[in-house]
Amino acid sequence: MATPSESDYGVTVRLSATGQPPARDGPVPDRVVSVLFETGIEEWRRGWRRSPGTGPSQEAIVAASDTTRGATATTQVVPGGRLAYTVLGAPVDLDRVAVAVSEHVDGVRGTAPTVIVDDLAPVLTGRERADVEPFAETLREGFGGSVNDVVVGCTYRPEIAADLGALFDPIEEVGRVDHPVRDAFDRLRREDPTTFGYVRRHWFEAWEGIRRCDRNYPQSRQVHAALEQPATTPRTLGATLSGLVRLGVLETWGDTVGPTRYDLTAYDADRMWLVGAAIASSGGRD
Image (tube, rainbow, N blue to C red; front, side):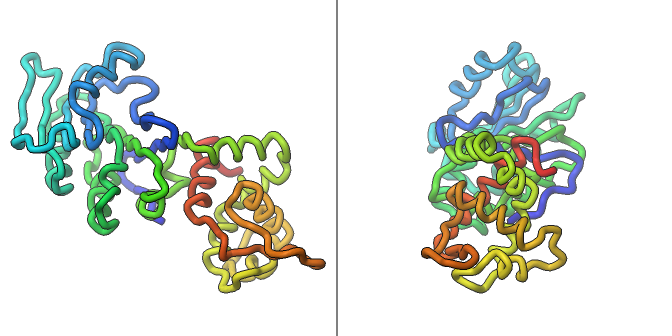
């Protein structure tokens, strides 16, 4: 899991498994640098018409989507200065994208811009994680005090889930989760608020204990024993693990007469990450 940013701005990832990522939902920033991996320039510009207001007063676009494949790299400024765009085409080296974004950020006058990435999924598809990490770090820490915020849209797909989870912290860096796990999360909140409360408060220790535990079918006390300086007790951690079973992260093992055993061979690490993200985007832990 990535280390959250300590820069002067925040990074917010917005996920969707049900449609276009909501990268620009909410109030429209005055100045924007948009990075397009999935959307064409015209389609992206039309999308501002569906947003509140009339769109940003100034926008720079870095286009690296398939719709610009084969285009010659070029930068143009539309008369009036409200729009500038750099067309890189696809596929493109991510270092070139980062440089183009930085140049546009540096060129903004007045209010610091918000950087918006339309969809990171095409970047994660077909690339090794190590090739994407420098670009993620640029988004997280590469702009100093020159940007107001960075918003990253991402279509959530199983084949990129592990890389997404390694690149971004679910608690600190995910701001929205449009995924079926959200429905299960809300259902647990309605049907069993006590267990829901344990999951919300102790998700991180459960995640850490499962990672550290070297048993395939442990009891809650054995998962608890793997923790260093835990805030939970074996009982409260057990209640948390029970909630994670109901959320589809874990399974129980066999029909035991004694304490419940958990089947860590069936542990779904990607879903666990999503649960953490759902906790954060719904108001976080107590």
